Image (cartoon, rainbow, N blue to C red):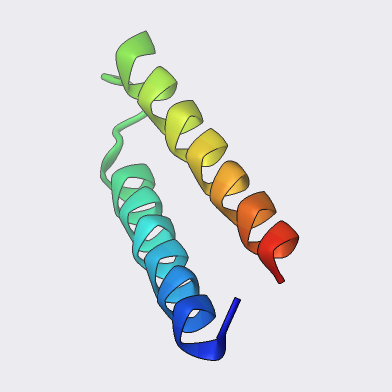
Length: 58
């Protein structure tokens, strides 16, 4: 994987992490339902998969 492509993947990971953090900060513990938690878990899984792919490609 070349540096340009690697940089693109890293930027994509940063964007997804930023989305995750925004979602996490917006959640109110008193009103959070299972769908919100499932969505957060899905985002974490997606970030993990993207990170593993990036590691494998390098």
